[in-house]
Image (cartoon, rainbow, N blue to C red; front, side):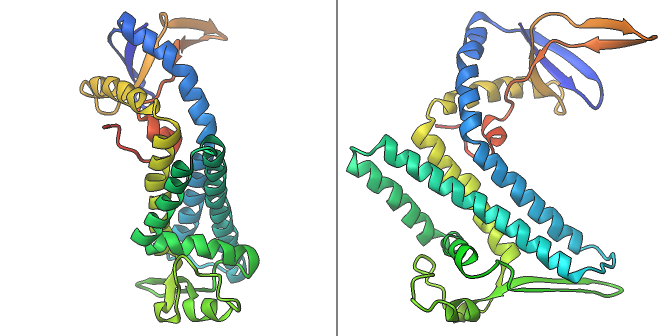
Length: 282
């Protein structure tokens, strides 16, 4: 089995070296662990797709192109924000339930999880706000309170917000904003900027916590593949790192030749491919 650098765009393949016996053994040992982790971390990848769809739509509104369906734009923003908040909530509840099952006989560990969430809320008002705001969207009203878009010959002005005064006024029981302690003094809430900050905490802080709690084996695995990726990219920075088991085959059919490469797709940046941001240094 060989270590390969390959560029699909440039159709360039470089054989770096043969993998040694220890590296091949690690590949075989790590493969089922990675498969399980990819299945468990699908929720983070779904979250990433939902966030990308939201930002792509917001960016489309920042172009100077005239748009004729104001109501549909607002509808799409509400839909995309709802999708995102639903997936974020699902992640939190999924791993909270996993945590409780895993450590149901360990009160100290159970407290550790609630302390982590409280600490993150205390560190990031944006994180605390969206934990509360998800409840508002589920029980009281959709996420986008105000949407305005104005195009001139030299600029595009876009407003995607909610009004803190209205949100606080709708809280009849005083229980909707327990984590963020939202008050009317917050004024107009820029949902684009706030969601950007919240998403960063979800994929980095929350994602790191999940990985360290349930998937400690992933850290040496990530480092193993990162080292091999670095080795390949020192030769050519645009290469993706693969393993190749066998030799390329040229297949001839219908007057043309096709090159078949027996490449094995292996992680280059394991945590990024799982949908989270984690340092591989432990």
